[in-house]
Length: 462
Image 1 (cartoon, one colour):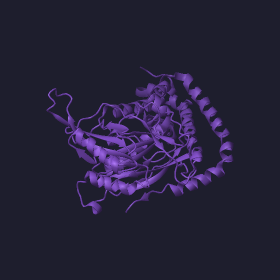
Image 2 (cartoon, rainbow, N blue to C red):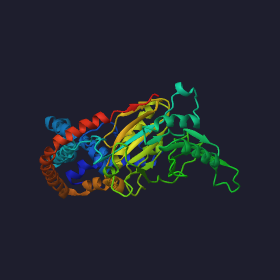
Image 3 (cartoon, rainbow, N blue to C red):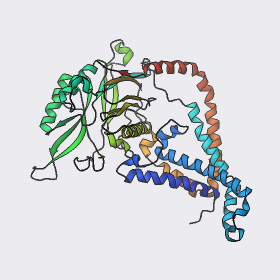
Image 4 (tube, rainbow, N blue to C red):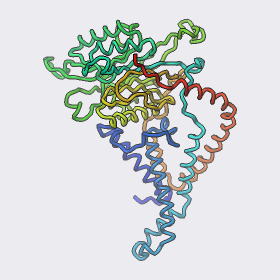
């Protein structure tokens, strides 16, 4: 099929590029780890991620490549036209000069420049944790018992409980790393959970590895292993949430563990008012409590394409236990967790118990690593209040942006001018908001400074 429109010809490569890497992410067992896509840095186009996901970044990069190649091609062809034999390549040269002489490259350049403008107007700072009228302060903790304290290379359930007790007075949500403890049966697992509930007052995300009866064996004589996480507290006799790992590392895990087909669930954690805040100022009656929607996922699941697409509402916090085997792998997975946090508009508590594991809080304005290696830590984050649980555009519609990208290709001549005028309209609308933003800039600056002071992690070494 021949594309006669110059606009279609220059937008074909970006559409192909975005489609290629989106397809690879879906069909490869390593998900986005097997793609080239940019996950590091803030960039001028990161604000597109909650709307169009990672395919938007792939399309932008390819579109800039087209713009640059067109600029180089224009210089090369018009400066040295005799380098191409006219008698053999006249038609090809005519097509190239037609593209270069059209307005399509200029329109694409204008569109790319317009798409970068919101990054200069929109901030991505954490919420002030002390302003309880607009944010819910939430202290989270990653439980990583150090060898120096417990002298165990294989940490036990008692070790994790003892370490959690040291953090429960300062952190409302605690998370153990992936496969922190092992259970040989479901009965042993339930007994271990009961011991955790009796000992710890905070919400605890207990990640574990368990042996269970293989449902495919009618005799029940065959056992299988799986990795999961259960969220519990002393306020409930049973865990609030169960989740089992869905994506296993090829060879390293796929031969010894069983994956789960079930998507993550969601539950509302109830928070009572802090000691220094009156009940009426914390929340309206009769209960005077706030709720924090919470979900979970485990390590490699974060590299999968759209791992939270089955959630019906947006979570405020994602508990994410992990266990990687190398610092470079740990950092790569940390970037994946940060990307997923941006896509669905949430905060991820990433707790990596592997050798040289990278741990921290991502999303909601947070992007810095809090810990490398073992050693428990806590951090206070701000959750918007009242919390808007409406899902982001990408969380609702996934990679539907690919249809838009291919619409650019097959829109022929009418789509180029349409994008031109749409871009101008968007720029005008953006600049009408500048006055409003400037009117509140002084207040925003003071809140940001306060947020920066409050967002530094507190390392716990008791």
